Amino acid sequence: MQALGIDVGGSGIKAAPVDLGTGKRIVKRKRIPTPQPSTPQAVYAVIDELVAHFEWTGPVGFALPSVVRSGVAYTAANIDDSWIGTDAGADLSARLGLPVTVLNDADAAGIAENVLGAARDLSGVVLLLTLGTGIGSALFTDGVLVPNTELGHLEFKGADAETYAAARVVDSGLPERKWAARLNEYLLHVERVLAPDHFILGGGISKDFDHYSDLFDTRATITPARFRNRAGIIGAALATGGTT
Ligand code: BGC
Image (cartoon, rainbow, N blue to C red; front, top):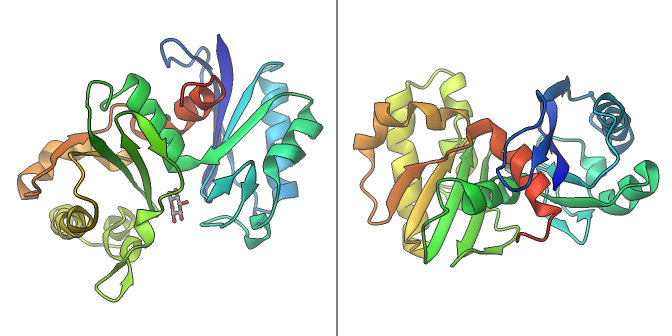
């Protein structure tokens, strides 16, 4: 079985048809810059384009940087505020005439890692954190997702944790190892609150894991994600197939 996975980010909307058995993209992914302002109507027009590009007629998984319950976005991070209250599931199913599953982007990444990636053989409490512009979180207990955890917004050092420890602080000039030391502080904080057995670290930065892994001293194990920036697309596709 196959599904089209779509991952909406602040700067790009990425999509690819995915084989649900292997997690492999069947054809090359396509990326279209996120329209500005990134209102639902503007993003829907991009989705039309992506569905037409792949000549897609099957199930669609749609990952958003939002708390999502029953297809409705309740928050909006790095996308236009007008997403809040939008029933993306109903809108897109009606517009495309296809079954559409909507979920949080970090939850999608977590599903990919949990079903086919770095968390596949792990049991207990597993917390995937996606490190990019923000910090996304996906919490699993023995493979079952607790959706919409939003641990990037824990208050830490008097501010939103993601402003202190997301990977974007490296883009703003903080050396990578200094950022990793901050990340370790944040992980220790999360560990005090939740005591996970395992952390999985995702996002583009996970490819450099060996450069700074010596700085981590959590009790929980820490493993880099397998799918990195592809996890959102793969997990969105998997979420359509009743795998969660
Ligand atoms: C958002 C989350 C999202 C994460 C990664 C956070 O700012 O609140 O919903 O998963 O960024 O995109």
